[in-house]
Image 1: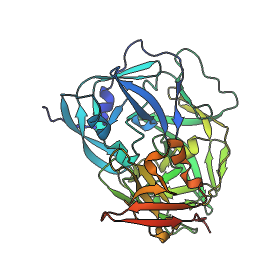
Image 2: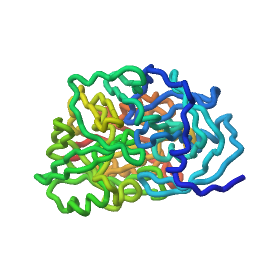
Image 3: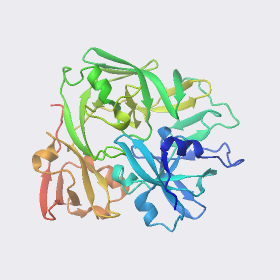
Image 4: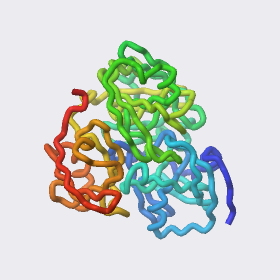
Length: 393
Protein backbone atom coordinates (compact mmCIF):
# COMPACT_ATOMS: atom_id res chain seq x y z
CA UNK A 1 0.00 0.00 0.00
CA UNK A 2 1.48 3.32 -1.02
CA UNK A 3 1.73 6.10 1.52
CA UNK A 4 1.46 9.36 -0.40
CA UNK A 5 1.75 12.63 1.49
CA UNK A 6 -0.16 15.03 -0.73
CA UNK A 7 -1.79 18.35 -0.18
CA UNK A 8 -5.53 18.54 -0.63
CA UNK A 9 -4.99 20.92 -3.54
CA UNK A 10 -3.35 18.12 -5.49
CA UNK A 11 -6.43 16.03 -4.90
CA UNK A 12 -8.60 18.83 -6.17
CA UNK A 13 -6.55 19.22 -9.32
CA UNK A 14 -6.62 15.48 -9.98
CA UNK A 15 -10.42 15.18 -10.10
CA UNK A 16 -11.74 14.73 -13.65
CA UNK A 17 -15.11 14.96 -15.30
CA UNK A 18 -16.80 12.17 -17.28
CA UNK A 19 -17.13 13.39 -20.84
CA UNK A 20 -20.66 13.81 -22.12
CA UNK A 21 -22.41 13.24 -18.80
CA UNK A 22 -23.38 16.86 -18.12
CA UNK A 23 -26.86 18.03 -19.03
CA UNK A 24 -28.97 21.03 -18.25
CA UNK A 25 -31.28 19.51 -15.64
CA UNK A 26 -31.50 21.07 -12.22
CA UNK A 27 -30.47 19.07 -9.14
CA UNK A 28 -32.79 19.29 -6.12
CA UNK A 29 -31.34 19.84 -2.67
CA UNK A 30 -32.74 19.81 0.85
CA UNK A 31 -31.69 22.80 2.92
CA UNK A 32 -30.86 22.04 6.55
CA UNK A 33 -28.25 24.69 7.27
CA UNK A 34 -26.25 22.94 4.54
CA UNK A 35 -27.32 21.86 1.06
CA UNK A 36 -27.98 18.10 1.10
CA UNK A 37 -28.05 16.11 -2.15
CA UNK A 38 -28.95 12.47 -2.70
CA UNK A 39 -26.19 10.65 -4.57
CA UNK A 40 -25.08 7.17 -5.65
CA UNK A 41 -21.45 6.02 -5.58
CA UNK A 42 -20.24 3.56 -8.23
CA UNK A 43 -23.84 2.91 -9.31
CA UNK A 44 -24.59 0.84 -6.19
CA UNK A 45 -24.02 2.80 -2.95
CA UNK A 46 -26.65 5.41 -2.01
CA UNK A 47 -25.49 8.31 0.13
CA UNK A 48 -26.30 11.87 1.13
CA UNK A 49 -23.69 14.55 0.41
CA UNK A 50 -23.46 18.24 1.21
CA UNK A 51 -22.67 20.73 -1.53
CA UNK A 52 -19.79 23.12 -0.78
CA UNK A 53 -18.57 25.87 -3.09
CA UNK A 54 -15.31 25.80 -1.14
CA UNK A 55 -14.74 22.18 -2.16
CA UNK A 56 -14.58 22.73 -5.90
CA UNK A 57 -13.64 19.68 -7.96
CA UNK A 58 -13.62 17.38 -4.94
CA UNK A 59 -15.64 14.46 -3.65
CA UNK A 60 -14.90 13.28 -0.12
CA UNK A 61 -16.48 10.54 1.98
CA UNK A 62 -17.14 10.22 5.70
CA UNK A 63 -15.03 7.63 7.53
CA UNK A 64 -17.89 6.06 9.52
CA UNK A 65 -20.13 5.85 6.47
CA UNK A 66 -17.35 4.16 4.51
CA UNK A 67 -16.67 1.67 7.32
CA UNK A 68 -20.31 0.58 7.33
CA UNK A 69 -20.82 0.54 3.56
CA UNK A 70 -20.22 -2.23 1.03
CA UNK A 71 -17.49 -0.12 -0.57
CA UNK A 72 -14.18 -1.81 0.25
CA UNK A 73 -11.40 0.08 -1.57
CA UNK A 74 -8.00 -1.61 -1.79
CA UNK A 75 -5.64 1.23 -2.69
CA UNK A 76 -5.35 3.60 0.26
CA UNK A 77 -2.83 6.30 1.08
CA UNK A 78 -2.58 9.48 3.11
CA UNK A 79 -2.74 13.23 2.52
CA UNK A 80 -2.64 16.46 4.48
CA UNK A 81 -5.96 18.32 4.39
CA UNK A 82 -6.82 21.76 5.71
CA UNK A 83 -10.10 23.10 7.04
CA UNK A 84 -11.69 25.44 9.55
CA UNK A 85 -9.91 23.68 12.43
CA UNK A 86 -6.43 23.57 10.90
CA UNK A 87 -4.56 20.81 9.09
CA UNK A 88 -4.89 17.11 9.67
CA UNK A 89 -3.78 13.90 8.02
CA UNK A 90 -6.50 12.01 6.20
CA UNK A 91 -6.69 8.73 4.37
CA UNK A 92 -7.21 8.79 0.62
CA UNK A 93 -8.76 6.23 -1.71
CA UNK A 94 -6.51 6.03 -4.76
CA UNK A 95 -9.15 4.36 -6.92
CA UNK A 96 -11.53 6.03 -9.39
CA UNK A 97 -15.07 6.60 -8.17
CA UNK A 98 -18.18 7.77 -9.96
CA UNK A 99 -20.82 9.86 -8.23
CA UNK A 100 -24.30 10.19 -9.70
CA UNK A 101 -26.57 12.99 -8.53
CA UNK A 102 -29.90 13.24 -10.32
CA UNK A 103 -28.99 12.97 -14.04
CA UNK A 104 -25.40 14.13 -13.54
CA UNK A 105 -22.45 11.78 -13.20
CA UNK A 106 -18.93 12.82 -12.23
CA UNK A 107 -15.75 10.78 -12.03
CA UNK A 108 -13.06 11.35 -9.41
CA UNK A 109 -9.63 9.74 -9.53
CA UNK A 110 -9.03 10.21 -5.80
CA UNK A 111 -11.42 10.28 -2.83
CA UNK A 112 -10.26 11.72 0.52
CA UNK A 113 -11.79 10.22 3.66
CA UNK A 114 -12.86 12.82 6.23
CA UNK A 115 -14.41 12.66 9.70
CA UNK A 116 -17.37 14.64 8.42
CA UNK A 117 -19.83 13.39 11.00
CA UNK A 118 -17.62 14.71 13.78
CA UNK A 119 -18.19 18.18 12.31
CA UNK A 120 -21.78 17.78 11.12
CA UNK A 121 -23.66 14.63 12.16
CA UNK A 122 -24.95 11.28 10.91
CA UNK A 123 -27.18 12.92 8.30
CA UNK A 124 -24.14 13.44 6.06
CA UNK A 125 -22.15 10.77 4.21
CA UNK A 126 -19.94 12.88 1.96
CA UNK A 127 -19.07 16.28 0.53
CA UNK A 128 -18.92 17.48 -3.08
CA UNK A 129 -18.05 20.73 -4.84
CA UNK A 130 -18.60 22.46 -8.18
CA UNK A 131 -17.28 21.02 -11.42
CA UNK A 132 -16.22 23.20 -14.36
CA UNK A 133 -17.22 26.43 -12.64
CA UNK A 134 -15.12 28.48 -15.07
CA UNK A 135 -16.86 26.95 -18.09
CA UNK A 136 -20.54 27.46 -17.28
CA UNK A 137 -22.66 29.80 -15.12
CA UNK A 138 -23.87 28.09 -11.96
CA UNK A 139 -27.15 28.66 -10.13
CA UNK A 140 -28.05 28.02 -6.48
CA UNK A 141 -31.78 28.59 -6.05
CA UNK A 142 -32.58 28.56 -2.33
CA UNK A 143 -36.17 29.64 -2.93
CA UNK A 144 -37.06 26.46 -4.83
CA UNK A 145 -34.29 24.17 -3.58
CA UNK A 146 -32.17 23.33 -6.61
CA UNK A 147 -28.73 23.86 -8.10
CA UNK A 148 -28.13 24.03 -11.82
CA UNK A 149 -25.17 24.39 -14.14
CA UNK A 150 -26.26 26.30 -17.23
CA UNK A 151 -24.62 24.32 -20.01
CA UNK A 152 -26.69 25.42 -23.02
CA UNK A 153 -28.99 28.20 -21.83
CA UNK A 154 -28.07 31.64 -20.54
CA UNK A 155 -29.42 32.25 -17.02
CA UNK A 156 -31.85 35.14 -16.68
CA UNK A 157 -30.55 37.82 -14.33
CA UNK A 158 -33.31 40.41 -14.61
CA UNK A 159 -34.04 41.81 -11.16
CA UNK A 160 -30.74 40.51 -9.74
CA UNK A 161 -28.03 42.66 -8.20
CA UNK A 162 -24.58 42.33 -9.75
CA UNK A 163 -21.57 41.69 -7.49
CA UNK A 164 -17.96 41.36 -8.77
CA UNK A 165 -16.19 38.15 -7.72
CA UNK A 166 -12.76 36.60 -8.07
CA UNK A 167 -12.43 32.85 -8.53
CA UNK A 168 -9.02 31.99 -7.14
CA UNK A 169 -7.50 28.75 -5.85
CA UNK A 170 -10.88 27.01 -6.11
CA UNK A 171 -12.54 29.69 -3.97
CA UNK A 172 -15.12 32.39 -4.64
CA UNK A 173 -14.06 35.77 -3.21
CA UNK A 174 -16.23 38.89 -3.20
CA UNK A 175 -16.43 42.37 -1.74
CA UNK A 176 -18.77 43.03 1.17
CA UNK A 177 -19.00 45.28 4.23
CA UNK A 178 -19.97 44.75 7.86
CA UNK A 179 -20.71 47.79 10.04
CA UNK A 180 -20.25 47.18 13.77
CA UNK A 181 -20.82 49.98 16.30
CA UNK A 182 -20.06 52.50 13.57
CA UNK A 183 -16.89 50.69 12.47
CA UNK A 184 -16.73 49.45 8.87
CA UNK A 185 -15.02 46.16 8.02
CA UNK A 186 -14.98 46.34 4.25
CA UNK A 187 -13.05 44.17 1.85
CA UNK A 188 -12.74 40.61 0.58
CA UNK A 189 -14.93 37.84 2.00
CA UNK A 190 -15.07 34.14 1.13
CA UNK A 191 -18.27 32.45 -0.05
CA UNK A 192 -18.84 29.34 2.09
CA UNK A 193 -21.89 27.19 1.33
CA UNK A 194 -20.26 24.47 3.45
CA UNK A 195 -21.00 26.50 6.58
CA UNK A 196 -24.34 27.27 8.17
CA UNK A 197 -23.26 30.50 9.88
CA UNK A 198 -23.63 34.16 8.99
CA UNK A 199 -20.39 36.15 8.91
CA UNK A 200 -17.37 34.53 10.56
CA UNK A 201 -14.31 36.75 10.92
CA UNK A 202 -10.82 35.29 11.00
CA UNK A 203 -8.44 35.67 13.94
CA UNK A 204 -6.37 38.13 11.89
CA UNK A 205 -9.41 40.33 11.19
CA UNK A 206 -10.34 40.12 14.87
CA UNK A 207 -6.92 41.44 15.89
CA UNK A 208 -6.58 44.06 13.18
CA UNK A 209 -10.02 45.55 13.91
CA UNK A 210 -9.85 45.16 17.72
CA UNK A 211 -13.14 43.30 17.75
CA UNK A 212 -12.55 42.09 21.30
CA UNK A 213 -12.67 45.66 22.59
CA UNK A 214 -15.39 47.08 20.37
CA UNK A 215 -18.54 48.21 22.18
CA UNK A 216 -21.49 45.80 22.29
CA UNK A 217 -22.96 42.75 23.97
CA UNK A 218 -21.22 39.42 23.39
CA UNK A 219 -22.30 35.80 23.47
CA UNK A 220 -19.36 33.48 24.10
CA UNK A 221 -19.80 29.91 22.90
CA UNK A 222 -17.55 26.89 23.32
CA UNK A 223 -17.74 24.51 20.38
CA UNK A 224 -16.26 21.07 19.76
CA UNK A 225 -14.84 20.31 16.31
CA UNK A 226 -15.80 23.59 14.65
CA UNK A 227 -14.56 22.23 11.32
CA UNK A 228 -12.22 19.78 9.65
CA UNK A 229 -8.75 19.85 11.17
CA UNK A 230 -6.75 19.03 14.28
CA UNK A 231 -8.17 21.64 16.69
CA UNK A 232 -10.84 19.87 18.72
CA UNK A 233 -12.37 22.84 20.55
CA UNK A 234 -12.96 26.45 19.54
CA UNK A 235 -14.24 29.57 21.27
CA UNK A 236 -16.64 31.64 19.18
CA UNK A 237 -17.83 35.14 20.07
CA UNK A 238 -21.13 36.40 18.63
CA UNK A 239 -22.18 40.04 18.37
CA UNK A 240 -24.74 42.02 16.40
CA UNK A 241 -23.83 44.20 13.46
CA UNK A 242 -25.63 47.36 12.43
CA UNK A 243 -25.45 46.49 8.75
CA UNK A 244 -24.14 43.85 6.41
CA UNK A 245 -23.87 45.14 2.84
CA UNK A 246 -23.39 43.01 -0.26
CA UNK A 247 -23.78 44.70 -3.62
CA UNK A 248 -26.54 47.24 -3.10
CA UNK A 249 -28.45 45.05 -0.63
CA UNK A 250 -28.31 45.66 3.11
CA UNK A 251 -29.19 43.30 5.96
CA UNK A 252 -29.62 45.08 9.29
CA UNK A 253 -29.13 43.95 12.88
CA UNK A 254 -27.52 40.64 11.84
CA UNK A 255 -25.37 38.47 14.08
CA UNK A 256 -21.73 37.84 13.22
CA UNK A 257 -19.03 35.70 14.80
CA UNK A 258 -15.35 36.19 15.37
CA UNK A 259 -12.73 33.65 16.39
CA UNK A 260 -10.04 35.19 18.65
CA UNK A 261 -7.81 32.13 18.29
CA UNK A 262 -9.01 30.79 14.96
CA UNK A 263 -6.78 28.41 13.00
CA UNK A 264 -6.87 26.93 9.52
CA UNK A 265 -9.39 28.75 7.35
CA UNK A 266 -9.92 31.22 10.21
CA UNK A 267 -6.32 32.20 10.92
CA UNK A 268 -4.41 34.71 8.77
CA UNK A 269 -6.02 34.71 5.33
CA UNK A 270 -6.38 37.02 2.35
CA UNK A 271 -10.08 37.32 3.16
CA UNK A 272 -11.63 39.05 6.19
CA UNK A 273 -13.98 36.20 6.94
CA UNK A 274 -16.50 33.80 5.48
CA UNK A 275 -20.14 34.32 4.49
CA UNK A 276 -22.24 31.28 5.32
CA UNK A 277 -25.65 29.91 4.45
CA UNK A 278 -27.49 31.95 7.04
CA UNK A 279 -26.83 34.82 4.62
CA UNK A 280 -26.87 32.99 1.27
CA UNK A 281 -30.18 31.22 1.99
CA UNK A 282 -31.96 34.57 1.67
CA UNK A 283 -31.00 34.81 -2.00
CA UNK A 284 -31.24 33.08 -5.31
CA UNK A 285 -27.70 33.07 -6.69
CA UNK A 286 -26.10 32.87 -10.13
CA UNK A 287 -22.32 32.61 -10.30
CA UNK A 288 -20.57 33.47 -13.56
CA UNK A 289 -16.95 32.86 -12.61
CA UNK A 290 -15.68 33.28 -16.18
CA UNK A 291 -17.09 36.82 -16.42
CA UNK A 292 -16.22 37.55 -12.79
CA UNK A 293 -19.70 38.28 -11.42
CA UNK A 294 -22.23 36.92 -8.97
CA UNK A 295 -25.91 37.78 -9.31
CA UNK A 296 -28.14 37.91 -6.24
CA UNK A 297 -31.90 38.18 -5.87
CA UNK A 298 -33.33 38.49 -2.37
CA UNK A 299 -36.56 36.53 -1.77
CA UNK A 300 -36.45 36.12 2.00
CA UNK A 301 -36.39 38.78 4.74
CA UNK A 302 -33.82 38.69 7.50
CA UNK A 303 -35.02 36.89 10.62
CA UNK A 304 -34.52 38.46 14.01
CA UNK A 305 -32.66 36.52 16.66
CA UNK A 306 -35.20 34.90 19.03
CA UNK A 307 -35.17 33.10 22.34
CA UNK A 308 -32.97 30.04 22.45
CA UNK A 309 -31.75 27.29 24.73
CA UNK A 310 -28.12 28.19 24.18
CA UNK A 311 -26.81 24.86 22.94
CA UNK A 312 -26.46 22.82 19.78
CA UNK A 313 -25.95 19.12 19.24
CA UNK A 314 -24.85 16.62 16.64
CA UNK A 315 -27.08 13.65 15.94
CA UNK A 316 -24.83 10.62 16.45
CA UNK A 317 -27.48 7.97 16.82
CA UNK A 318 -25.34 6.04 14.34
CA UNK A 319 -22.69 5.33 17.00
CA UNK A 320 -23.72 6.71 20.42
CA UNK A 321 -27.52 6.33 20.19
CA UNK A 322 -27.95 9.95 21.16
CA UNK A 323 -27.42 13.61 20.37
CA UNK A 324 -24.02 14.87 21.48
CA UNK A 325 -23.88 18.43 22.84
CA UNK A 326 -21.44 20.15 20.46
CA UNK A 327 -21.70 23.83 21.42
CA UNK A 328 -22.71 25.66 24.57
CA UNK A 329 -23.20 29.36 25.28
CA UNK A 330 -21.41 30.15 28.51
CA UNK A 331 -24.27 32.26 29.88
CA UNK A 332 -27.03 30.46 28.01
CA UNK A 333 -30.06 28.70 29.45
CA UNK A 334 -28.56 25.24 28.98
CA UNK A 335 -25.22 26.02 30.65
CA UNK A 336 -26.95 27.65 33.62
CA UNK A 337 -29.15 24.55 33.99
CA UNK A 338 -26.09 22.28 34.07
CA UNK A 339 -25.74 20.93 30.53
CA UNK A 340 -22.12 20.31 29.53
CA UNK A 341 -20.18 19.91 26.29
CA UNK A 342 -20.10 16.29 25.10
CA UNK A 343 -23.13 15.30 27.19
CA UNK A 344 -25.22 12.76 25.30
CA UNK A 345 -28.92 13.64 25.12
CA UNK A 346 -31.00 10.45 25.40
CA UNK A 347 -34.57 11.79 25.57
CA UNK A 348 -36.34 15.12 25.01
CA UNK A 349 -39.71 15.61 26.71
CA UNK A 350 -39.97 11.89 27.36
CA UNK A 351 -39.31 10.86 23.75
CA UNK A 352 -36.19 8.93 22.84
CA UNK A 353 -34.10 11.01 20.43
CA UNK A 354 -33.69 7.97 18.15
CA UNK A 355 -37.43 8.22 17.47
CA UNK A 356 -37.32 11.87 16.31
CA UNK A 357 -37.61 12.45 12.58
CA UNK A 358 -35.12 14.82 11.01
CA UNK A 359 -37.86 17.44 10.67
CA UNK A 360 -38.79 17.09 14.36
CA UNK A 361 -35.12 17.31 15.25
CA UNK A 362 -34.80 20.59 13.35
CA UNK A 363 -37.75 22.06 15.23
CA UNK A 364 -36.50 21.11 18.68
CA UNK A 365 -35.59 24.73 19.50
CA UNK A 366 -39.22 25.76 18.92
CA UNK A 367 -40.47 23.72 21.87
CA UNK A 368 -41.79 25.95 24.71
CA UNK A 369 -39.60 24.01 27.18
CA UNK A 370 -37.34 20.96 27.21
CA UNK A 371 -36.97 18.18 29.74
CA UNK A 372 -33.80 16.30 28.91
CA UNK A 373 -32.33 13.02 30.08
CA UNK A 374 -28.60 13.18 29.42
CA UNK A 375 -25.62 10.91 29.96
CA UNK A 376 -22.42 12.58 31.14
CA UNK A 377 -18.85 11.69 30.34
CA UNK A 378 -18.68 9.62 33.54
CA UNK A 379 -21.55 7.45 32.28
CA UNK A 380 -24.14 8.64 34.79
CA UNK A 381 -27.53 9.99 33.67
CA UNK A 382 -29.27 13.09 34.96
CA UNK A 383 -32.38 15.14 34.21
CA UNK A 384 -32.26 18.76 33.10
CA UNK A 385 -35.18 21.16 32.65
CA UNK A 386 -34.71 24.04 30.20
CA UNK A 387 -36.63 27.22 29.52
CA UNK A 388 -35.52 29.34 26.54
CA UNK A 389 -34.29 32.88 27.03
CA UNK A 390 -33.31 35.86 24.89
CA UNK A 391 -29.50 35.94 25.00
CA UNK A 392 -29.40 39.60 23.97
CA UNK A 393 -31.21 40.82 27.10
